[in-house]
Length: 109
Ligand code: SF4
Image (cartoon, rainbow, N blue to C red; front, side, top):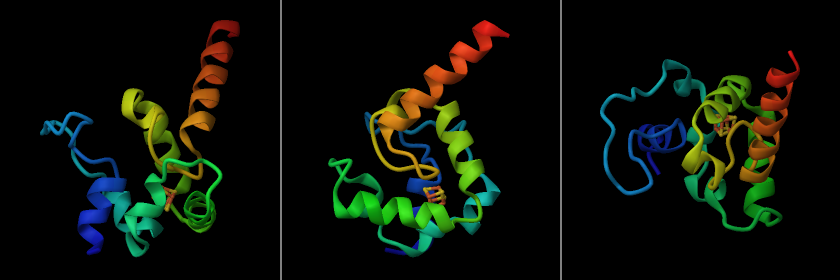
């Protein structure tokens, strides 16, 4: 898969889950350093949290120079990012837990 297309998809595509395009979103510049651009996008969107593809995706994220930015962006988007894919080394369940944790910290502060 060509890197730019993958970057758009995994670097947070302007496509929403319904297939509509949100042209207000731009692909952030840091996505040019995304390690996932060198790997097939399918490993980042496995439906099985414990399978080989997901482990492979998380291993790539662990070596990715933009992992923190990627995770921050994923946490900023709720909805479909909470349900699909590996971003910043986290799966949907882990992101939901991180978001809950942050919300609790905000309440406590
Ligand atoms: S952290 Fe993972 S999902 Fe995010 S850009 Fe890097 S390789 Fe891609």
